[in-house]
Image 1 (cartoon, rainbow, N blue to C red):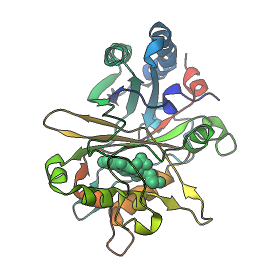
Image 2: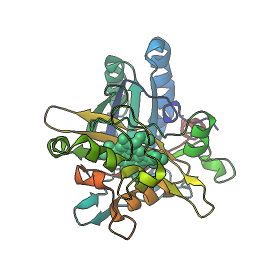
Image 3: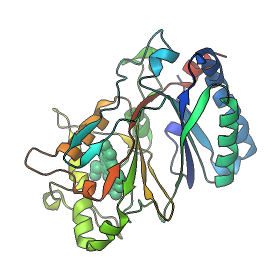
Image 4: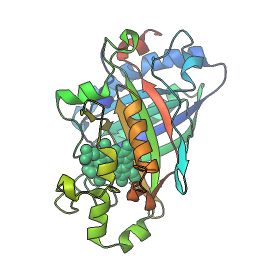
Amino acid sequence: MRHQPGLLAEANLHSLYLLFEAEPGTEALIRHHLACFHPMINDYVDEYSESELSSFVAIGSEYWSVLFPEGRPNRLAAFPGMAVESRVAPHTPYDIFVHIRSDRVDVNHLVGTHVCELFADSLKLIEQVKGFRYLDGRDLTGFVDGTENPHGEKRRRVALVDHKTDPLFAGGSYVHIQRYRHRMDTWHEIPTKQQEDIIGRTKSDNIEYPSAEKPAFSHTKRTNLKNGLGESIEILRQSMPYGTMRVQGLFFISLCHDPNPFKQMLKSMIEGDGRGHYDRLLNYTQAETGAAFFAPSIEFLKRFL
Ligand code: HEM
């Protein structure tokens, strides 16, 4: 089964995230328009081939059974909202998530306009966010983001459901999003060394701290997890910075063949290790949204043409 191209794409310069709520009773229309989605995107991919355009569409965990009552991906679950003291991961469900990315902001705008036209009678746009590449692939905190992402063939293994696990949903991906808002003023008040301790890597040259020197509260310590067999638990992150002069942050996106790795990492960040070592990055940023989706294969979407 073919995966949707935007899932595994390499970093682009610009992205556009569209989050929709479905109008009640329009399920048949939405199924048909979802089937038309990639043929429409492919026309733009041909026309603007130099822009590296790609896209994916994902269906919300709550909405899935309304849209496709005949069956759901076997691990699809609601977003794991959590809260400990001031560290919160709110659950703010959406029905449909459209992710558009390319190296041209005008092409993203054009495609986004067409997507909204396609779904005009059935979906209400609730939120739109424009992501951008910042310097050499950095988050707005100034740290390079995405270094430890899986590469090459491993990207596919980490991000996509395989045939043995769930045959009907092979080639699909469990998607989690969170829009984080940074407290840039307080972050800039602390010295670079303290910021580096919080991330567990150096800032300008992006060198990983030796394991023994990584504080237990550092972001990379809290998210670099192993399973019972000592194997790394991994996700594919497709996050990008967003913002204006007033509000700035990271639109975090996790893709995985299983929803649990994201949940385990988030839990480790918020709850910590049971000895008070929660992720200190959370003192400087806060999730304002959070939602779980599944992005099915091209063949699954095309069934409703
Ligand atoms: C505002 C929110 C976040 C920011 C600014 C951020 C930033 C970063 C940075 C700078 C790195 C180090 C470079 C790299 O390997 O990419 C990193 C690593 C990582 N982050 Fe985040 N991150 C955020 C949220 C999250 C969340 C919510 C998760 C998962 C639930 C997560 C999972 C990871 C993982 C798995 C790594 C790689 C750890 C390793 O193996 O070294 N991040 N992040």
